[in-house]
Length: 383
Image 1: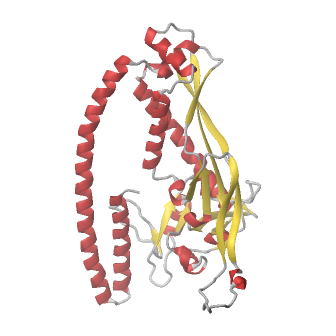
Image 2: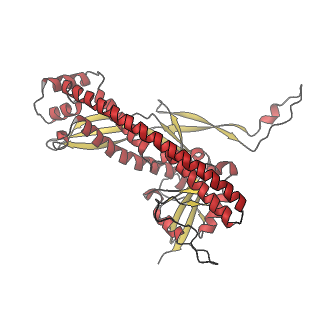
Image 3: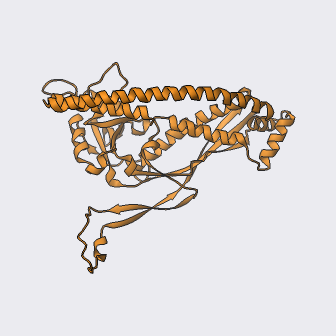
């Protein structure tokens, strides 16, 4: 998340706090928050000005980099194009032949590195990737064990010189989490039409397709670790909530207070739409107020709502339709092991004039703290 987005989110929280204090009749406190809002707006304006200046400087630099790349491209042929043409039985230029032989002999290939860099760049910009909220452990090992600190509620004790304290370590220690990185990949067919792209455009095209698949796969793995049983198909038991008031209770009572900071409510759009219709019986007003002139940034009791797609879609269980809501501090609940390298392999396709480019990565997702998340569910009778 960049600085401007972070400041805007803080501004939204301050506005909600000011509105709540005003409604509670705490005018002086609300006025203090309003002053803080003014300062925050100035911070945002300055941050946006800096960001604009940096983007303009970057654009000027990109022009020079692009000019250099054009010159480089004239000197060096594309490995991807050379490999594809060779697999299709098409004649190669001298430069394409040289690039292909160098890659086969194990020499470093710039384009493969560029593909990995482009993938990482697109992932950093992707707002829907849940990976940004979990704990990440980068490892070159394919499998192994990782120690997680586990404690009960312990406090410091009085230290008396000469008195043995060896019995005071109860409840303090580590738990080992075993991981095994899974090899994940995707084939991308490269047709003659694709090969008409420049090397730069082809890398961008394949990287974008890979990122779309990667985001869906990682999001599914993260949520499966928390929402599904170990068999990967049955949903875990959920705590029934009727509407917004019950969700508010959950945000205050269902996680340890130390875990609420950084927690969020993860749900599907269908679930949010159902909650958004919930009204206060006394005044008939909806609990979730929306500003139709602004992008949707819903909060419930100050806890941000993060929308995810099919991974938290409503499902049927015990003759009822369940609208799931995951209340979780993902940073404490989930750990993702990865080597963060994206490698590519080329292979011949059996179809005429088509080759396949395979992009591969390795990762594993494990539940870290069972107390850092709770599954809620609104139920609706079927039929």
